Image 1 (cartoon, rainbow, N blue to C red):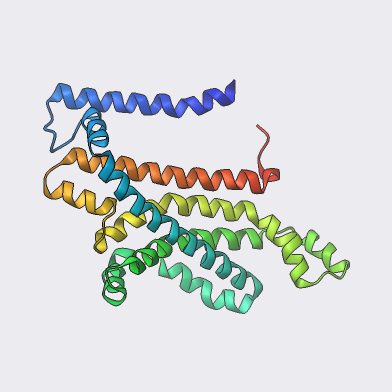
Image 2: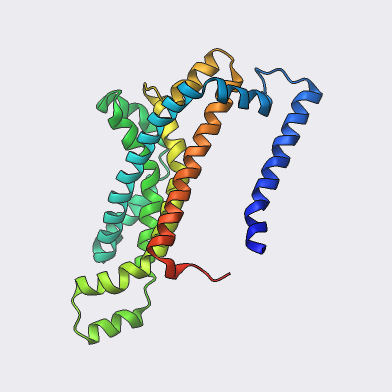
Length: 251
């Protein structure tokens, strides 16, 4: 029963926020182009369901491809940094320092060099998602209990066997934590990538709504974007539960 209440709690909070939003707009008479009511956004979601679904599909493909790219390179980088202390000391500070450079500053350069196609969008999403995946995976590898490694070495296990049987399983919960963080960033990164270059995704729909002072359309696009982010986050969480059920805490 407590678990059901916990799952319903966010629904109650969301309903209260939406009701307060609706009441504020209607009672204060806020113009629709300034702040649309939830009913206006919902009506636009229904009326523009075809174009929004098409735009959402484009953004979803960019988001998933960029996320997969970040996952592959992020885990590979974490393994390389974990395997060599020399590489870690040389590269890790640069990796951290790179996060001080905003993606908005390099996005135009990527568009210039890679064009207005899919490539710069994937790179932008991958750059945003790469860091949390890499850092979380590296922290997981470095948090392995030394006693487990010592036992494996006593049994004359190879470096590959130690990694496969001890370090990787130990690091998986941390890796999934980084993946969940990256998943929450991926949708917004895809939207920003569409803003930086041309495209037919949700970014294009929001540009059109902004140009026409169609705030309900912008709000509807935001709702679809939030749905994509929640779907990816939920998919990562589900995969985690199916892959490493032993890491779940007993509630």
